Length: 405
Image (cartoon, rainbow, N blue to C red; front, side, top):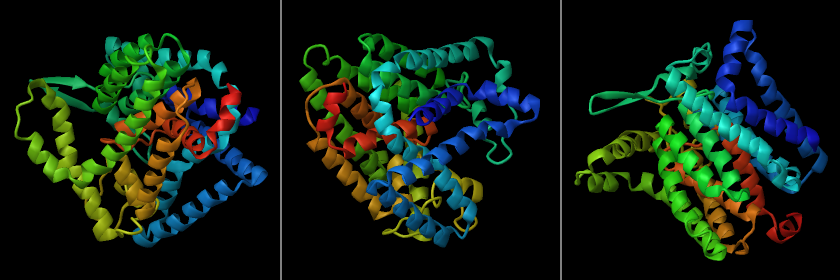
């Protein structure tokens, strides 16, 4: 148990400070030492599966094996399949570590506060200092992902940089801020303060999906002091709607672009321009890869869609990231992904409506994951660790959890 939790939070801490860690490891000439955290997670994951031998674990492993074979069939590239497995194993670890995590779930507040505040401070320093030394970490030879730290966008002729703070990228910084804030909102009485700090910090990252999701979250939190029962009901409803939204938008992308292009939105165009690019370019291109170089039924298998295609694809022309969590799931698992989301919606609908901190926390994770996932494939490892917790919670009989709090 202790090793599982150490590995969980080691990943969280090192992701929160990944930029300076990579910088110093690069100076020492040992950049790949950081991947010890991944090796530890994999070893403990395998050990937990073999020790507990729960049926759910073997069902998940069976699905992974089958759809890895599907991925290899359609991509003819083992590297893509292995990259796809590398992407999702934190999710599996989160599912496995759940029982250990909730035993002391209320005792993690100091750590979550420290990591949340450090992310805020890192962004402020990045903004104030320009490009601090840790932003000049060496490129990863495989992915060259550090180049995204140089992303910027133009508004009225002014170039606005996307800040990452202590995180590897602005996207990772936003993801870590959001996941930390969800815990603090659920288990702290100062939830409005943390929600306000979240929006302020997210504005520095310019990650529009996270900003919109945080603003909508505050709209829900307004109800919490008056009626926690109504708040939890609306949270369940919001979680269901966020799943439906992430499914519907890519499917009806062209109809939506015709609607939003017929209005003048003023400064809101910064948000809608990004959405428009996904509707016109990214989502249709992803669907084209699935339909023409995969299967409507099976998808394209693990590793057959998303960032792995950008790095390794040999068959499909113009590979592209999906920028939508539903498209990533459908591209990886096909119809099975849709069935999974349908079951998840049903489980959320049927889950016990009584309020407690744990139920709020788990529903917040699902709600925010899919809401942000409308315009991005939410594959940050720490986010997937926490999503694994939420999925295990929704799968299990929740009546047994009230006695743990």
